[in-house]
Image (cartoon, rainbow, N blue to C red):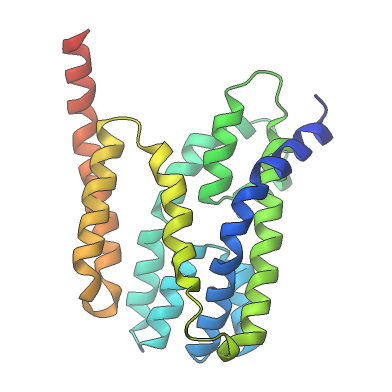
Length: 232
């Protein structure tokens, strides 16, 4: 397959996921305006940060008047997973020029990472072509929806349950990613603590769940490998 063919294959594969991104982006745009950001600030935040979960967390914290250190700390913790994603996917782009690596890094998302790694197991796939085919539509749809959310803002009826998109999108990515004891422990501990800590001030339950989930995964992974070795 050519680079173009792999790009189009990525576009086709990500198309169903884009439906889940639409309400997510609308919520991000509307929430930014609701939190007191101007339209330019909201769009600028979306373009520069381009990180749905941490973007929403930052908007929520800014709206609650949280200290800047808490906002920055939360964004850093939520995005720590991108460090692991980068370390995992970087070998596939080792031979790219620096400008392409920068673009790949900027477009990295949960969806682009998970879908690309699955396809990269096949031989003869253009890594750059397929990855950009997945990542670029996600970026375009996210930015368009954020702008629409900024424009319509408070005009979104309160009864329209747009918030449901966020957990659904992440659940769709989470379930296939739970493959062993480490990932299961991380999902269980992180999800439980984030849910239990939902009432903590400044959304501290989210970074608490993220940190404890990562630690649980790191501790459980060697145990799972050891048990697997014993069974063999």
